[in-house]
Image (cartoon, rainbow, N blue to C red; front, side, top):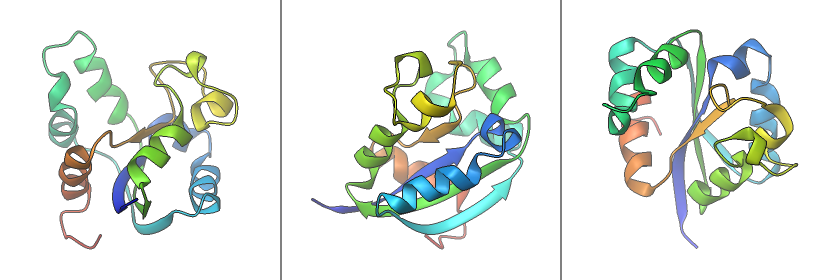
Length: 138
């Protein structure tokens, strides 16, 4: 196993519902280490860059609108196989397909408001961490 650092976002719906603390606690209880945290309201330009792989898809505009609709907590999370561990902890993208015990399985009901984002690969983690932590502190 390799030590990795990945990005986790508590999306606007998770922030509105006061779930940031629970999500951070779940990550830490699993043995992952918080290397950085930043509370921000994502500008549209940054959201478009973050979701660039979805440009041209019908859900791109609504995705950008949603992620910019309120504060987001960006977390740099580190640990053994952190990318796959976080993805497993989050559950399926569609909360209705997520197993109980996962963040989305326990806390979300809608595909369009699924509480969290996590990088899906090492390349995505590098790109996303650089976007959300441009000062390189992580």
